[in-house]
Image (cartoon, rainbow, N blue to C red):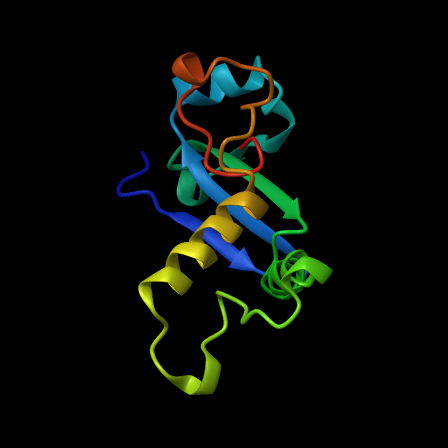
Length: 132
């Protein structure tokens, strides 16, 4: 049996890798949905059973790619001369307005209000980003 499962996230340069344990009921539900191809059943060592693992790579959400996206999104002619809200000018503490603008920019880039793969968010939980 699996005790105290954790989620593993690896922020690579271009993609974000996510893996976590799923109980049997959640795994069966995922297998019937658009997320089924991301679920694998693994045999645990020492004949201690099996575990369902959800593993997915989110291309475009890695550390360097996310940084590039925020810089490109902010670099428009209309904003020329404006300080980027996510970069602290002169290594001083950012103002609340900069934090708010940065958070709004990041939420936009993560598509936090995106569709959960066409599924009802009430039936399948709240999406976190990019429809996942």
